[in-house]
Image (tube, rainbow, N blue to C red):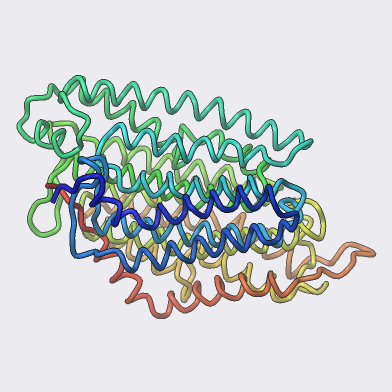
Length: 492
């Protein structure tokens, strides 16, 4: 099905709602001085977007806007992830002292527009659309990172992010130009047909893939393109760092999967996939996956700031997620999608607790967590413990089943060494996660330290994320079924 422009509007109702909400936020910001209303408008727009996602006819798959976008379950899956990530970010921002000092209208409006860019990244059917969507999300991310005015760390982080991101985007665009020259088209389905016919020479194709992988590797914080992450997370407002860690990373993985599987590979029997044109990209990703998870975990052991620690933790989890692509099987991809959902709950939960501590101490240092459980922060401490155990992969939390499904898919393909390296890296991660746990529960509170105040607003988001982390661990069937259903690509 190839829809025209007018007929396609029905299928991008969620994105239209988000754009309208962003415009309303900008206009209201000019007319009303009550900044708190702006966050409510953003939340309302995101809620309406989620409702419109449910109303869009999902039984009809095809191209939108003259083969610029795909409408399929895979794109719909990531639309839900992005909308929920933005909702959590807005909610955390409402309780963050950092964000209260910002220009609220610009902040929430840009956040909504960044979510639109992420949605179009997941649905891109054309290399040009993929690049424009990625740049939309990237530019919003650069601005939000440096949104804390008169803060040197925030400005420095935004500048580094802009420079590194500009170089990565240029490299990726150069790779796309190579691919266009080889295949004569920007359409992903046409590119797949050319590659399947074997007309494209292997060496130039491999160069194009490596160049594009460099750009997307930057977006998902994959080694060696991860160096921006710790500095950007440390300088950005905590809710923005949380958004980058979940939504931006998921958008990068969505586009990476679109390129490597339906475009550069073909589905075989028994849930297996086969790469095309003689370019063995799974072996390249295998090396990058091992290096990424190992470097991320070892670097996190050296950190004294929680934001930098979570940044390197995100690098390590990017390495785990890449395992789902390396195995070239449907179970591996299903496990990767399930892992992204689990990562949403446990990682955003850790950032939500960090906001509570940061509001009290004004710092993200681990020392700020000292004796948290014994100075009025018992619930945040318990919640943080659950999120960290889940990130490690301890049962019965959702992170355990995410890693279990992922490692099982790797073992199913007889890649025992990769599975062993993943398990060993999970063991290494215990070192820095337990440092936070020990500080919260075993270290004495600083002399004269005041009690940590947890507002009802903070309790609400922590309770929601904690409940999901526990319940979806014990009852992971529906969430895994959602991931399995979402692994459907429209290919013409």
